[in-house]
Length: 229
Image 1: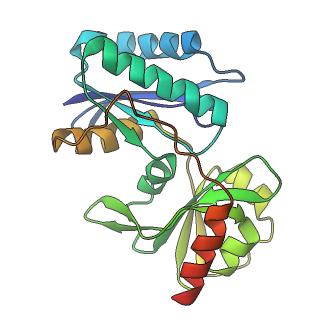
Image 2 (image 1 turned 180 degrees about the vertical axis):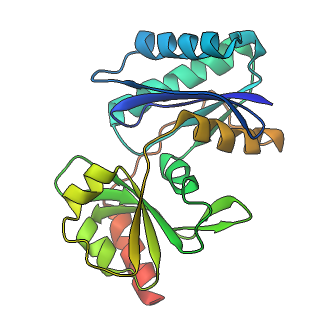
Image 3 (image 1 turned 60 degrees about the horizontal axis):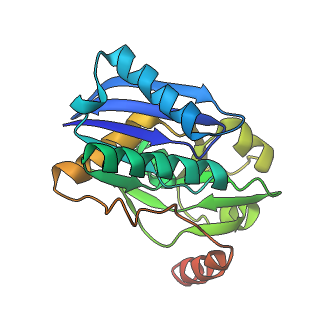
């Protein structure tokens, strides 16, 4: 199944094409300002580079965030328009899940991290990998990265933008934590969407919406996680 994936949650627009497990194309384009025209132009370039037309795409994957709120909204809008105009299915993919997928070969706990852009506050979640797939084990987290690190009691892989993680957590002294550098990737979004779409699981394009996380989520997350450790 040929699926086009887009993620506009970060400083670069990510667009990728997959056919099953095969990556046909993958591209990132710096986006100081996101616009529908810029993203559509990027998509057209990726399709042209892969020798495909939009009509040959069988489904779409869209990164839902969290991340840049404006960027995510624009990307989701593009995904909805593509799904409506082509009458093809679409599947939303949380950006944290797409980041966690980069560490799918790890046996440790996986914790993708995205800066909120406000001080030391981050978006995060914990995932486990099994048979090449990643599954979230609890609620999403929004809060201070030091509090998040302080809750970790087992070997854990932090996944995210390496420069952001080093700035947010400059004193990396815990032996049970390692960093796997990764940024939003269009081909990963496409692959995770393809898994859902091939199983007949798609989202309603009309109701597809960005994943909006609020800091109140952090209190519930910390309370539940602390009670288990």
